[in-house]
Length: 177
Image (cartoon, rainbow, N blue to C red; front, side, top):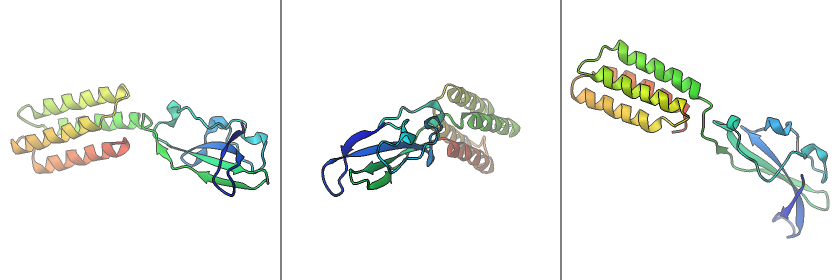
């Protein structure tokens, strides 16, 4: 599609714009990876639109748009918009796997005073949230706070806290927190 709009370059006349949506700086596949032409009326960008509806496969990726302006003198200029991270579920399977490993890490520590039971319940609740497509960041912060509380009560050693916090930080690096 070719769209009309204004481009503040040489004049205020309406020029021709084409749009190519990018995922992680590459053309989005359903647009057939078509390159934008410098010629008005080119059919190679017939999938382009000023609007793009975010798709499930965009989750965890950065979206931007390359806008090309062609004036009636056949002069073209392109710019790429600032990219936006689409939060989502691209890494949910990895996060779930890492939460399962964290749970096993807690079990293997043989914590006392109910600490093991409470922490494994919290981790199980986080796994359920991830399976439901929810962001686990707040729950991971609460888990760190609970671990810190157990350190003050002597149920978890500082070394164990450090190990658990490292695992939690790794999980947080996988999701947009």
